[in-house]
Image 1 (cartoon, one colour):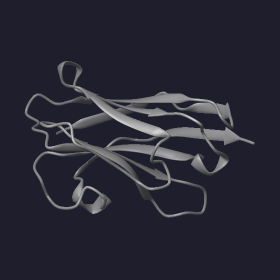
Image 2 (tube, rainbow, N blue to C red):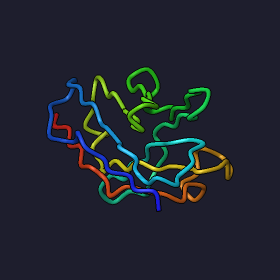
Image 3 (spheres, rainbow, N blue to C red):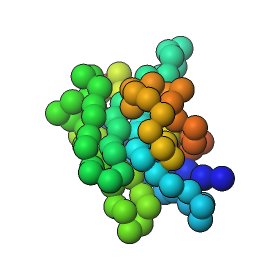
Image 4 (cartoon, one colour):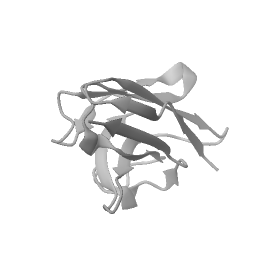
Length: 125
């Protein structure tokens, strides 16, 4: 069982920054990629960003490209999402997800078998 715990969410004003963390645990887990998804009020879950564990290749949704940066710390089994220039439309519950092996497109939530509980990000105008 892979366990993912997100932290770092909060209430900020437009233009501010937040740094989300996702700590992974589970002694028998393997890892191919980790990603961030979000779900705003009344909206479907959408892809935000992903990173491969081995090479560190990164992927971003067009809506966050240039503002958000995903990174990983292998020693700490942790992935981060640095969010700059936050906008009200970034308001959502942010979820961390992981693939033990490659299962398909990084952009599709159904390809991630492991999920955290989410952390709320609220951006006021």
